[in-house]
Structure formats: structure tokens, C-alpha cells
Image (cartoon, rainbow, N blue to C red; front, top):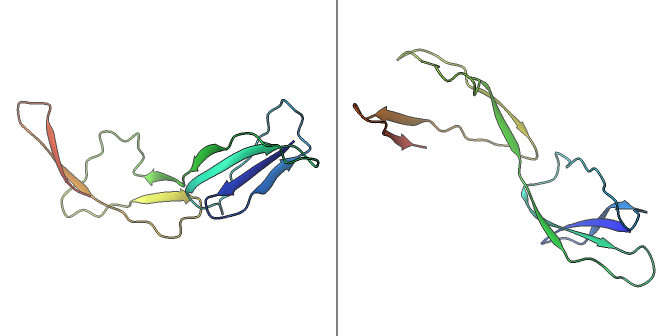
Length: 117
């Protein structure tokens, strides 16, 4: 069996071949693969081109904040203070945008009103 991948705009490309009829296979999604919806399929090696139904998968880049840490729930920044915001991007992204939202808590309730983004 051959395991193949395709985007909506490209031909099928093999990920692995010589696979048994029933098995599993580990694949590390390469950082160079752009975000989007891809299709997976299995087909017979050689002979007639019998293949499985196409299975859609979504590939997304991964972002994570390094500083401040997501575990810093009591983080308080002072007005006019300078803070470091650091992040990591894993994937094909070459540009990122940092947005700031301001939340104001309504006194006497558990409601927070947020604006920005």
C-alpha cells in the first residue's frame, strides 16, 4: 500500500510506500508544509489504481507564548512599564501580528468586557 497526501492544488505525493494492508505509520508534519486542508489516501502499489476514500486533514502552524508564560495567571503589569512579550512559531509562518485586548471587570459581577484585538 502507498500512503499519499495532496492539497487542493497539487498532485498526490507519496508519504510512505510498501505498507501492509493493515497497519499504522508515524509521520512528522514538516515545518515547511503550509497551513491548509490536505487529503490523505491509501492506494495499491502497482497494478490497478484502487484507492481508499480521501480523508481530509487540517494542518495548522503552532504558536506559543514564552514570556509571559500562560501559567502566569496573576501577572500584573504596571502602567508605563516596559514588558517583554516573547513567542515561538513552529511552521511555515514568516510573519506574525501581536494584538492587545483590554478587559475591564464590571464591579459586583463576574462579567468582563473586552475590547481590542
